[in-house]
Amino acid sequence: MTVLIPVIIPLSAIVLLIATRRWLIAQYIISMISMTVLVINALSLLTTLQLKGYLTYQASGWPAPFGITLIADQFSAIMLLAVAVVGWLVMMYAIGFVDAARKKAGFFILVQGLFAGVNGALVTGDLFNLYVWFEVMIMASFVLITHGAEKQQLRGAVKYVVLNLIGSVFLVSTIGLVYSKTGTLNMAQLAMMIQQQDVSELMNSYLMLFFIAFGIKAAVFPFFFWLPASYPTPPIAITAFFSATLTKVGVYTIIRFYSLYVDHDGFAWKEIILWMAAATMIFGVLMAASSFDFRKILSFHIISQIGYMIMGLGIFTINSLAGAVFFVVHNMFSKTAAFMAAGLVYKLRGTYELKDSGWVYKDKPLFALLFFLPALSLAGLPPTSGFFGKLFLILAGFESEDWAITITALVVSIFTLFSMVKIWNEVYWKKPAEHTVLSHQPVKVNLLPVAATVAIVLLMLLPGVFAGSLFGYFSRAAAQLMDVESYIKAVFP
Amino acid sequence: MASEIFKIAAVQLRPILLVLSLIVLYRGHNEPGGGFIGGIMAGMGFVLYAMAVGVEKARKSRTIKPVSFMGLGLFFALISGLFAPFSGVGLFMQGVWTEIELPWGSAIKLGTPLLFDAGVYLLVTGMITSIMYAIMEE
Image (tube, rainbow over all chains, first blue to last red; front, top):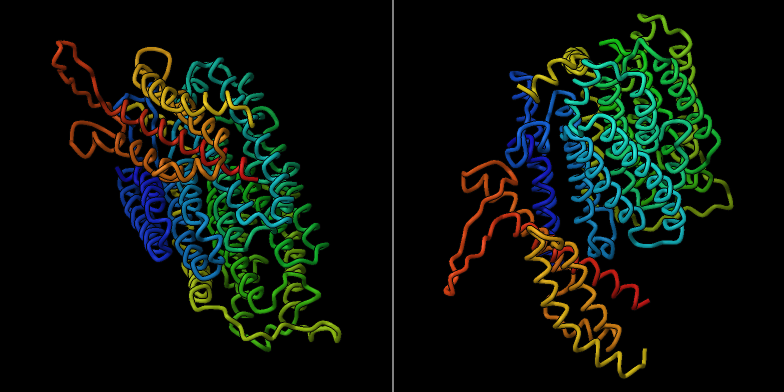
């Protein structure tokens, strides 16, 4: 049942939230309870998996290739835990941040829908079911991104909807192609077929289509255009939810498919992935360097950092894969923390434009600290989690002697630091220009968002402290990812 | 919109469509039909009515709000999934069936899949009406 609970809980929460949609207090309580249960369940899943390796569940009792299989291994458990913890904190932040009109118009229902989709995609072992969960997730995010219907939100949402629907079309038509060719939708059975029969030549074209589909979801170069257009438009609490879930689930599925199906020695997979990783890193960071809006810069950095995760996947050794997993988790925390800090500044100054802001450090030193630490982490300076994330990836790159990508990763780090310094100078440090009037309205930032941001920053620092033991754990998860045989055995005992 | 024929027809059609949609929902088990199609039919009944008499009056004439339909539908679907594990007869979404003898000799089979279909039916009805009402109000 523990595999099932991540899906059941948000769905039950939606039912309760619809029933109580008039009482905001009830909405808060139900949302928080749901997230708490998700965190506890993910923790118990993680401890069970250390002993057992895999947990499977055959829905409706049909044996593996016929029914829908749910399967969790350590990688999915890590992702479930990270999503739940970050979700818990952002939920707290959103309760204090989002305006009452949006809250009453079903904000919490949609967020639970988002989490149902994300958790479903993380535990499913069935191709079509994966598509369905992706749709659940995307539908919830469509509505969330337009929620409130401001003009700029709608403008961003059009690009988001169109590009993501194209991604969905690729996904479902590729699933159809795979089914017509192999006759199975079960992920483990497909892996078994690829091992036993020599279908890898045909599979390569399907996998490339899958890669495009998931690449659109994960915002990999050259499919990333929807992200900077849409992420900066909704209220920042929603962006924070997105940065913790959407693209990361895309990366999760890319890693899952790559490790299950791809014959990494054959074809040019490694080169393709590494080139794309490098391009993603460079484009993201350059576009960040050229924008002057707090949220835009952070959004472009999401893209750049997706590149690092894909790099870890492309090298495909146990160390690099563990580094990639570490980086995904680090990024979920750090990036979300940075968005949350940006939201606090917005409450204080009423703008995300860098040039209209300034002196936050002078007015609110705590807010400055709350951005400073995530910024260090994103740029990869010690002692934060970002430093270790990049360290593991770059060490793995040197080990496998992929010099070009490793050096790119190092150079891109410097540019990331540049953008972070830019934000720091403009928003927190600079004396505001003469003609700009800083809004000095008595700041009504309530305690909840600040507390949530403090908590996420502290949690973000923890991986830096326990980097060694965490890396050991992630290496085991990576080794498990590469062990396709036991994945198949777990589904077909 | 002002046609009297349409108005009268729409008002009369609503109950007929609702009954028909329930039949489609029930027969969907073994024959073409099911919760989705039934839900669309029921939704169309409501929408036609709203087109004839105006959205405001249509909204007032409904004691259960469209959103509540959606919530109820999701609830039914969830219950149908959780029934088997909680009653201890099987796994999540496993079908549980029971047969009810009717006084005139025949029997109907009821089970959790039908409950799930009913959930889909309500969800689709609520979805269609809430979307169409919103569009018609624009």
